[in-house]
Length: 199
Image (cartoon, rainbow, N blue to C red; front, side):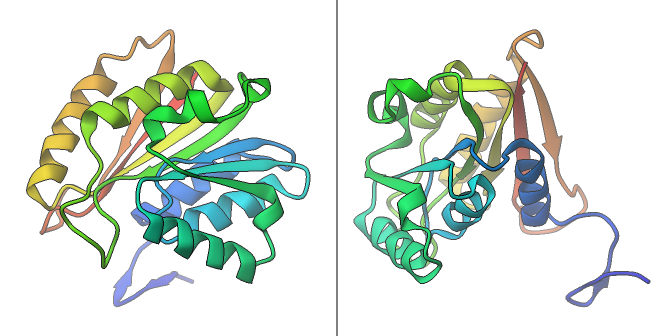
């Protein structure tokens, strides 16, 4: 029986379910994970469920609104003890995450662009995103995975997309495997995924 996706009948995974399926393979109970862009806290909750009672999630966002939304969602799901939130940019992760966790992070996710329903003049920038990815590649366990969900339907999103694709294409294959997952016949620049697996 075919799975129903809205009005479409599809067997291929949509973008956000695909992001979650990759992270499920990487993050196990007891692991350490990073939500690099908290947004409204949906990914934070998802990662907190994956790491279980003995794991830890570190979340980052520059907007206090995102911190508050994420805290509320974590409280509703009784997951606050598993998560530490930082009101800071993800490019500061190597300064904020305790050094004891270096080499132990198994999964990280970035939802790039701006916070839905918020100030559209505040958005992720390629230079800070790339700085965070570089730090994560130093902090991740072998086979740890970074998932980038790239929203490029606005001007700054397109700039970030181009910079990130150039950066990712130049990553040494001895250092990381890089996958791009994208529907190429859809209108209005739908989001797509770049996944980076540390070797």
